[in-house]
Structures are given as C-alpha cells and as structure tokens.
Length: 268
Image 1 (tube, rainbow, N blue to C red):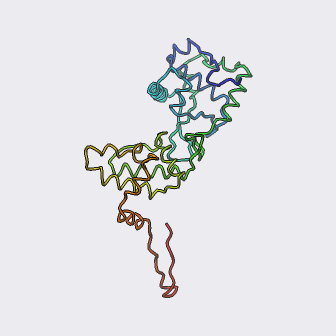
Image 2: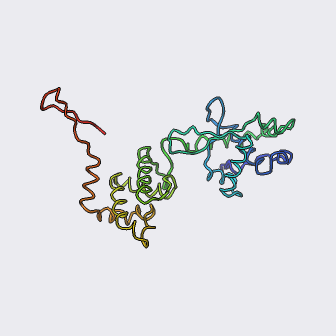
Image 3: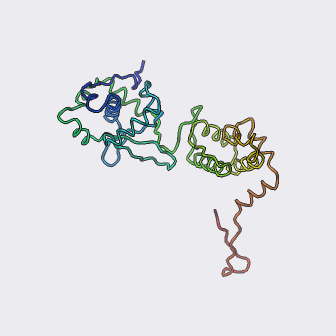
C-alpha cells in the first residue's frame, strides 16, 4: 500500500524547539522536508505552495487559526519568506521557503536540519512521486467538487457574479469559497451566463433588499441553488431583462470618411 507523505515521520529536535518554539520547529521541519523534493523554482529558490486548509491536513492537531498565527509569526521573525507566483490574480495561495540565512543567525552553531539529509530513500521517493501527482494550485484549472475543474473563464465569471452581488446587496461575500464556487460552476455547466446571474440578483434584490424579513436571503447559497435558480430567473420582469441586454449592446460607430453607407463596429 502506498504511503501517504503526511504519514512520513519527520525528525524532531528538542534543541531546535527550545530555540524557535515547539510549533515553529514542527512547521519548519515539515517545510524543510517539503522543500527538499519541491520542483517549484522561482528567483533561484525552491518553494512550497499550500493553502492554510492544506497546512491543517499536514498538521491535523492544529486548527486553521493556529496555522495562520504561526505563519504570521514566522514571517515577522523572518524565519520564512512568503510570496505569490500564482498565474491567476484571484489565486492568493502563498508560496513558502525558509530563510536559511536568518535561521542560521538565530540558531548559532546549532544545525537544525542535518538529520533530514539521512531520510530513507524509499520515503523520499514516495513523497517525491506524490508531490508530482498533486494538482498545482496555481494552474489555470482548479479542483472543484465531483472531480471537475473550472476553467479560467469560469473563475472570472464567478468572481464577477460575486462582485455584482456584493455591490447590489452591500455584502462582502468571497468568490473563492468551495461552496460558492461549486454552486456557480454547476450553473455555468448548465449553460447559464453572467447576464443570467445578474438578472437573478437584480430580481431578488428588488424584491428582498428593503424587506427586513427576506434581505438575509440575498446570499449565494439561496440565489444559486439548482432548485431555485431557474425559477428566480423566470421571475424577472421583461423590462429588467431588456435593460440588461441593452447594457451589453454597443452601438456602431459610423465612419463617414469611408462613404455614407460604411460603418465599423466597435467590439467589446
């Protein structure tokens, strides 16, 4: 049976923990181990990219707020360096590397990672293979539920829908939560467009926004559910649908220098 990299035992040094802290030492040991087999290189360094949720899977004994606080502390102490090399602007996944120069100054003559050079070759091979097979967070395609992937165009649509909802309802919903992305991606897969989403938002905002009992339903989990979305779309008044179509229409620009019947269309 294939061994999961998260089950591989990383050497832990009490002396290292006494210098930087117990949680800090655990995190740095794991990060160092990951860096040894990472194939992600930028600016002359190896990097490891992980979401906070993925770090909690690496350390199941920690809650997400513990990981966030720990990362901020290590950044403040300059023991780790974080950056973003993601291809999509909406992808805020952090990339991590250890500041070995600062760590050397902190630890003095003590070398915290000398043991990891003796990692068993079988375990190293196992971890390396798994690292290659894991889907890259920064690719144009991201993992969603049911093993489907949303295209970069779909992600842009999802972001635009949530921005529009936040504007209309004065909310602060995030576009990249799993539930929201799944709901919107399912509707996009069914053929619904950005204009359809805007029409539903406009319709329900007009009905609910000024109604204290219903305004809290202006949220993705209500608006974009499969069993509700089509009904909401069909509730839209014809006048509202036409206004959205007009917003998307760009009138032609006439070019009289090319003749009275000539014109060129501007494209969006």
